Length: 371
Image: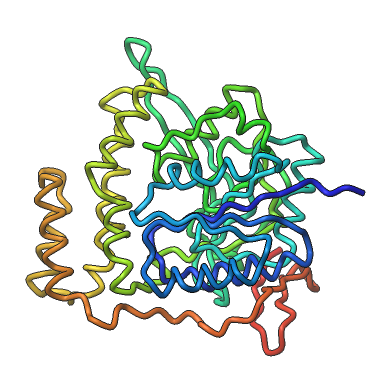
């Protein structure tokens, strides 16, 4: 049987320091399902650049595209797509995602069986080896609320977001969904030939825009929960090297976020007074401040200043200036360290065990219990 041809495109989400762990988990899975791999490197530090080039030299199926500047998410994807013209499917994945055994084949099986344009795995979040790993994206429900003058309000809900996987008392089934996220997403190449990945849409809105395009074209979007990946989200994996900071702030720069909002509003006819926008702004501010916050202490002037500039009245330029000053004054030269196991063994192997548990088959492994 001829297997569908898959091209994996890896882009850098917001940090460089998790590159090696993520790529290792992907590479060892090639024995289970063949793929070509295109890695888009936007101005990573010398150590990461050397690592990626070494991997490309060792694997003839891997290509690295290097640009000596930071790249937005869709901009990076668009650089890679011309190299994957012959692929039946494109697998987009970020460089802070760990994949579990069999993840790719499960996605392909679902796409083929359901003739879906987009298929996503169950996306977990946290430390991949922790028994407290949480759900990040199971399913995203999308609603539009009509307003005056042909405008509307936009609302999305992530089901079971932040719930520990071992506390979930239900069985996940392959199912159609409204939307999924770009952390890890399989897309049929023929659909991509008709869709548009606009460079302006970065990590904040790129997945929503593509899923709305799929829905408008009558295409199917599916969740395949037998495929699992883990997003090493900053709130649960607080690992920041000094070389991460410039890229992290670039990705969440408020001028860029404003451009994303304006384009999304115009394209999908969203009202200017949509209350969800400030909620998103608030998340962006708090997320961008994480390394500065962790580098300071409660009750100290710098921490109080950070919290004060989160207010809606604070101008974006002033907020960004304050955050930069706090990082310059307080971020430790050795960086912020997480409790990740940097000697992690791959592949991560989770198989169905007794009484509905999910058991890691490695020696002395932890158990994640679900039903």
